[in-house]
Image 1 (spheres, rainbow, N blue to C red):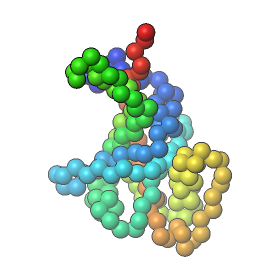
Image 2 (tube, rainbow, N blue to C red; image 1 turned 120 degrees about the vertical axis):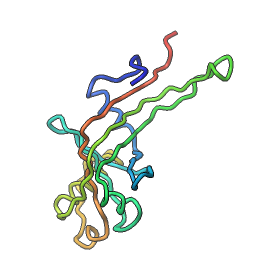
Image 3 (cartoon, rainbow, N blue to C red; image 1 turned 90 degrees about the horizontal axis):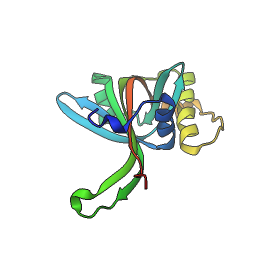
Image 4 (spheres, rainbow, N blue to C red; image 1 turned 135 degrees about the vertical axis):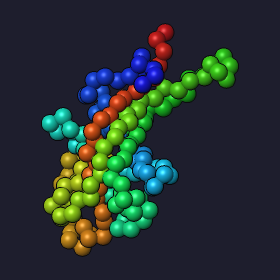
Length: 161
């Protein structure tokens, strides 16, 4: 990281950003071509391991790419605000972001899929409600789990006055 003065070192602070953000950009590789897709997500941070959960239709480019290459990266960002300066080169931006790398697996059994979908719903709604998905509903959706191997955080805060 070039700007180490903006690095977020504490795990709890990085998890807090992941909790605040609602859209994750998932980066995949299709042969030698990058592919980025914005997704709603859920997460778990247990025993020092970050896991992200996504869902999608049963077919499509994202699914094809993941079936060929399970390595991925992700990015979330939030708390954006323009900092106006005296000239164009003096403008800046307040933000918080987390970037990470890991491997994606497709959850196969209904119990795992239900748990993954509940993580997504909990994160997106902010509610502890336990949802129960029917077998028919679970057959119509893919649920992905990304086991994150490494992630970093970065932020630019408001300047002190």
